[in-house]
Image (cartoon, rainbow, N blue to C red):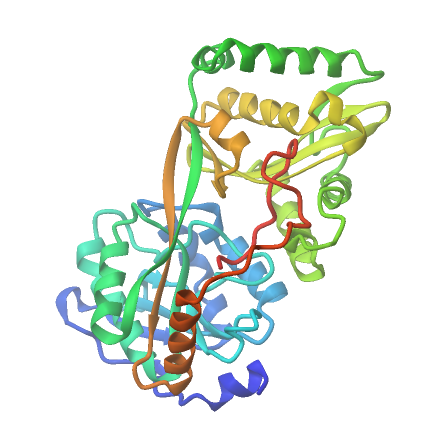
Length: 413
């Protein structure tokens, strides 16, 4: 059965407004199913994101609306909104019903974050609730998980910040309304506490780290026509993105990177066209001999930088252009007076060398107790986990120590 058939076969028990969980504050829970209702939220969306305790670029209107236009495949909107008597949103649960492409999960209708998996998926996803009002609003907003239980086989909320004030409320309602609710994956996100000057950051590291980076920088400076630039200076944003795609593909000769799939690439081209001129996205680049040899693509939110993707020319591996462009990016974060340089999920060796802090993203899962598909899936997975596993074959993608490698963003296992 196709994903479209699976989604359409589920009962639609909720349409439009639904009864509020309580009348405190006069808020009513509304579940938005159509694009017109989704786009009507645009004037309010980023206003609410600005008030969050754990806001991120991956929750911004531009990100989620463009993701919906380019990467949604066969998903259905299921956005919960708490509105006051005038219809003004006070909190939003950006959700959708979709089927994952993974072979083991393709027959499950999943209630998940909007943009929570598939091409172009985001990191640090959450319910959009103003800071300080989570204990008041989040339990009311989480009623959506109960109301939509009959329409899904499972709930899968990827990349939820562990420190989010919403996390415990989400886990509480899933434990009450579903079975086997809990944390499926816990991924580390290493980050740098940024000092006031690059020299202060260097002083945190041992002499071998400092000296090696300095020698690489000196070797780069000796290359013909070498320079450190930003997208929008010598190259337009469009041309810079094209260079990044080509450089990134060099690290993925088998073409397995989700960053360069057609849907994901259209999404990032459109996003970069909006955000690079606004400096909400930045792309430090290294040039030598008349061409770009390394590029790094990331986003600024509040006082944090999120390092999203990199690419570098393997013919210059001797000077480690991946590490040099990362140095250029970190120095740029310091110059912008940012507080954090976040390298996002995956615990590769180079991240451990650069970073002095860590925080966690959770993948939360729960199953509909009335779904036979969910029951079969969970039973088979339990059996597989008890069976001995054969030795894994050698990976074809770049290994964790490969110079400058930034893994493509993929759904958690």
